[in-house]
Image (cartoon, rainbow, N blue to C red; front, side, top):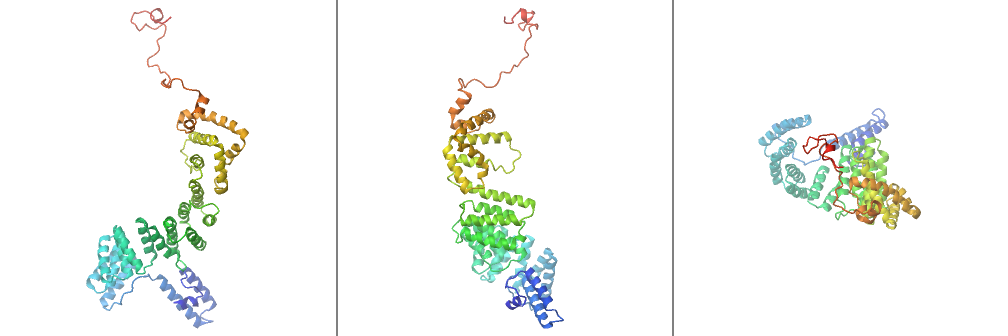
Length: 464
């Protein structure tokens, strides 16, 4: 096999696309007319590698000896090729009944039952399969998938552990095993399992690339639970992976960006982790040409910077609330006046704590620079002591008009003396604030008097 790669001038593990390109390149250099002997070598190497990559990896079974069994196997392969899963399953079941010593039929029957959704039967047959050879990694993997699809999560995890110990490294199996580890709060083991995928020294086929990206997503989501791999190591491997396979990841990158932004909320500005994460975001954004996907990626990048600020313990709740007001994420139904009131309420709170606010603003400017432009104008007003009082009075005028409509601000609660100063002290709080509403029609001066005397109201009971 290694010699086949050398003949085509490739490294071992090259993808099917690279094998095909190399083959056409070599046959142009060594045509059957000019170099028939080398052409035959190139042709054979290409056929070997093509067959090796298209043939599914799985258990090795002894060859069938019974002619009828061979004929049934051919029929099974035909149904499988035609994707007629019902006939595929029924033919496997019939073959297993007729030839119970040919375990290949039992293995194929389990695969067919899983595809048809017969999970209960698949579990029963997979358990029988494992009992015949408990140390076969492929049998253990079939049992793990059968348990998982049936909903036997604890049994699936146990079967995964055995298959992994026996050396099973199928990519779909590893993704399932890592998910089971995460479900049972064993994130350290989950990262270890997924690292088996990303550390594989090979070129990935196009259809495998999204699965590898899924493995990176899982590692980022679980890395913090005592993993042997550091965040920086994961980010470096991810960056290398993206630069090689970004063309196949267009649909997956928005989701990957979102997971990355959540995983990196605790990295400090300027650190190696921050720089690598920022480089990944920049690379993805530059390589993406789809407008909608670019919008999703831009949102993920915004989340990355914003959530890092939210996790900064040096920033007060008022400052974090102020930053959050600039991240409404396109909520068009929000009342614009309410947002204006919330902005004024927060700004007034920050203005009363001017020195502390300026100290926090400096932290944002140096360590969260993407957020600083949102607050820069307000900070400049606070920096000028001569304008602080003017700005406060100007904001209070608008705040006073809006506060009775919403009555949910924090400023008047925190600074009641300001409320008394602006609107005065309430003498009697028991007086209803609702205006008087007349229930009955007002009596005119020339109407009959309501006392029943028959006289006009003006000549009878009307007050004089």
